[in-house]
View 1 (cartoon, rainbow, N blue to C red):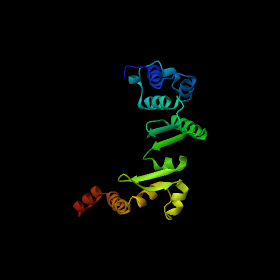
View 2 (cartoon, rainbow, N blue to C red):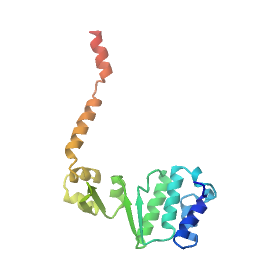
View 3 (cartoon, rainbow, N blue to C red):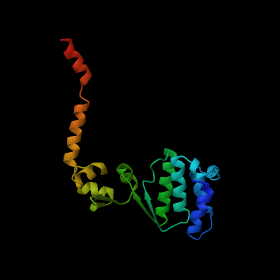
View 4 (cartoon, rainbow, N blue to C red):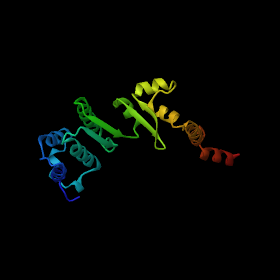
Amino acid sequence: MALTGQEYLEFHHAMRRRKDGPRARELADLFGLTDDLDKQVGQYSHGMRRKLQVIAALSHEPQIVILDEPFRGLDPDAAAALRDVLAGFSRSGRTVLIATHDLLRAERECDDVTILANGRVVAAGPPRRLLAEHGGTTDLESLFIVVTGLGEASEHRKSRIAGLFSSTPASETAASEGES
C-alpha cells in the first residue's frame, strides 16, 4: 500500500467526514505506532497493520464496532492494550462485537457469546450461564463441541492422535522386529 499510516487514518476520517482528531493520536500512542505513522503501510508488519486498522475503527468513536479476529497477529503487549481499549470502549456504553475462533479469550473477556453451527445459533448468553446450563463442560471449547454435535468427531480424532503417539514409535518397533 502506497499510503503512509497517517494518510490511511486521514482517509478513514475523510470517509466519515471527520478531521483527524486527538483520539487517533492517543490510540497510536497506546499501541506504540506513533513513530511509524510516517512509514508506508506496505512496510508494516502484520501486527502493525492490525493496530492501524483498530485505530481507524475506533478513533471516530462509533457507537458499535465490529471486529473480525482482532487479536490475531498481535504481540502480547499489543493484545493486552487492545483488550484494555475495548473494555474501556464497552464501559463507555458502546458495543463491541468480536467474531473469533479463540474461545478461551472469548470466555475470559466477553460478556455474552453466541455460538453458531451451520449458520444457526446453537447457544447464546453469558459464558458462565452457558457453562452452567451444559453441566460437564468446563470451558467454551468443550461447550462448543457439545452444542455443535462434534463430540463423536472429537473422540475419533483423539483416538487417532493417541495411535500416532503411542509409547513405542513405529520406527523402533520395525527396527526391533528386524533384529529377531
